[in-house]
Length: 566
Image 1 (spheres, helix red, strand yellow):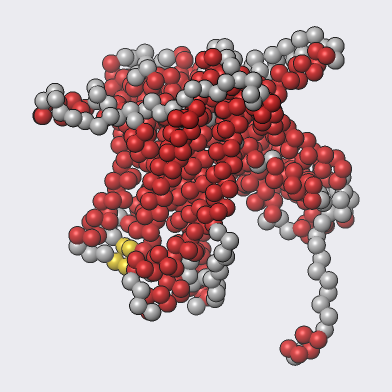
Image 2: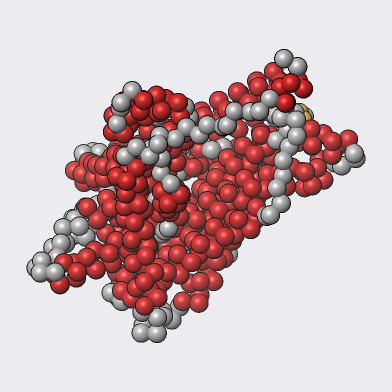
């Protein structure tokens, strides 16, 4: 058959493998219900905050809190962009000693929560720390030292903890770029700096914007680190007003303000991407060919990478180990403290239940879409991921408001006492808030695995008489098992590190490892906080290594594919 004949023949209609809407009403209702459950607490905060405007005087320090929050977010964002983007360019465009090892180790600071890095920083550089003690010994007691518990110090600590978000995004964007455009710019006379500014950065701008948005969202939701450094942000103000003055309406107004900050970050991320679209022609090639550095520049490049890794991971973990061994040597009962086992068990139990619930819901939502959900179902599925962009303090207050409204409605309907604090007075409230907060990473992982399943498999199962439930159990779930495993792990780690939700919703006598670390560090019990902090860091290292492994596989596969295509 000639090419002309092939063009002349009419193409068969493209078949869209949907499952003919089998079981569509029930599964579509599931997705809409999940979306409503996720959105209810946020909607409750917005309604209460807007409804109480004018009836409650705002806090006196509202304007300073807003300005401090803006300064913190902009400072951490700029620092993470500079450190993360700079390191990504350094390890991608150049070769130097230990470069092949450092390119993966630079992700490790992601395993150290900012509130853990914060109290370690204070223990080293505060008035009673070794640095200031040494300075007073050498230069006398009148030596001037910058204030440690300050906004700049908080920006530095959070930058060291959060820069891997930008580093990963920038590194991925640089790897995916073809070297053709960069080489063309160099051929036309541009030096490496000009080519970076005019060619590489525009192509990487969407990825940099996404990484920067993640950093700013994490900064906005931070609760413990900023308190260590006496930095008053809007998120901290929500908790202090709620727990300190019991002015619930003022707290919800601040929560709405925090929510507006989150929306502003998302809008800014879209604006940073710009309306322009950048595409590369000719498929994937080998990418950047790193230039080998020699002599002093090579050692400087290695020193910069080692310094970032040391400040964000090696030194903090080393200090935690020193404290833990020292505490165990001086107090043999330290390791046998019954509270440690209890609080760790609480963290693991809540995290495990949350992970199973999030994965089950994600499977149901993803399966409903494959069963032929319409536009409404697709929109509702996207709404289920909204909770991850909402700060934990807002979700916690929203849960309390939602069940308070439910209690009122039940009492009016003749149910004495409503729910009787079964939810808000127990761990159930924490679990509900956790599911809202961490449903997004579970859904993204499960959905990615479900999308890899050929639609023909689902259609074939239907043609053989299998119903939606059987297809989920016998087809979709077994094939999506890798995504399910990743989703379980991600949710467990995020839930173990979560702090604001537990502080707002925990019942009397219930404490988790993250809360224990926060309370001990707040009272300057650094050594006692070391062991639970090490457990949190060790648990967080697992998904970091999985992420590195997956990224490395994609890089190796992409490089091999590029070489085969040449």
